[in-house]
Image 1 (tube, helix red, strand yellow):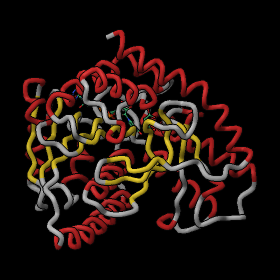
Image 2 (image 1 turned 90 degrees about the vertical axis):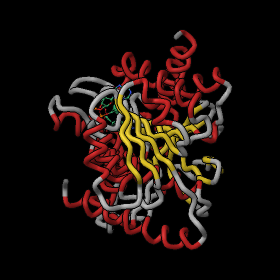
Image 3 (image 1 turned 180 degrees about the vertical axis):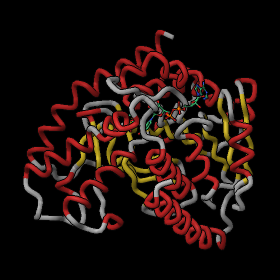
Length: 344
Ligand SMILES: NC(=O)c1ccc[n+]([C@@H]2O[C@H](COP(=O)([O-])OP(=O)(O)OC[C@H]3O[C@@H](n4cnc5c(N)ncnc54)[C@H](O)[C@@H]3O)[C@@H](O)[C@H]2O)c1
Ligand SMILES: O=C(O)C[C@H](O)C(=O)O
């Protein structure tokens, strides 16, 4: 693991420990978190980070292969979460039962030259199958969808849940936290401000130009950045996933930074469920912020999942243009997901 990831993991753990002490005093509820795709590139480090999160009392690791080994390994860590591994479809029900949060990084990752949409044909079916099981075994769980293309897999999940009569728009989240993590890192480097103090909302979706970082709202504000700097930061954030895919040269896409981002988002969901006030993260959710039915923006998390979808705030002209430019692609990715769910 890179030192920065280790630092982030230990910060996350320390933060959670503090919250744990105050929550424990108010008798913290038991929370079960399931990871589907837990033996994969994201699944394994994410399992590690969730095992380190003291808000988790039960950690269920499911995959089609490899989970007994991952579960045995992670279970030796001396933190409170009880770890169980489940393998194969016949164990999926048990893996899901009683889950408060289901995190889904199951599916194939990109290779160089591919778009996220190129993953649709394989991942759409995987997500549909897993969501069908979720609607049966843990219909009230919050879903953290990581599998790509997120712009389509979230609408697929919504349609599966609607068909099963279990859809609750407050409980379905596309995980876009990695875009925020990248925007914060790149902005801090360019603006020369402490990265741990930086916040940057990222709205839209999770693919190419649909990823729209709002650097005009970045804090701490910086007037050292030119328009060219903002354009370059925006492009780097939009192409962050491709930067990793190319650097890995055929060995997959972001796994460690994604596991960190997934752990941050799941931690925020747990805090919301536990009644911690003012927990806000960006996420791709059912939305009326624009005319599109799903859109990523800041979301206030609460005891039932989404408590409030927050608006976009003041945008720069460059961001307004980016917003108009992303709508066509995002709309067709959403429609593709909905059509797939209806046809299959
Ligand atoms: N949302 C994001 O920001 C983001 C970031 C990075 C990667 N991703 C996506 O996450 C997904 C996983 O990436 P990865 O690098 O971990 O891939 P990976 O191939 O390393 O792991 C995927 C895992 O999913 C498992 N799997 C396949 N079908 C399954 C099923 N039906 N049920 C349960 N598990 C199943 C595989 O066995 C494998 O262990 C990809 O679609 C990738 O594009 C999303
Ligand atoms: O880029 C990818 O294919 C994986 C992920 O969506 C990312 O943003 O890193």
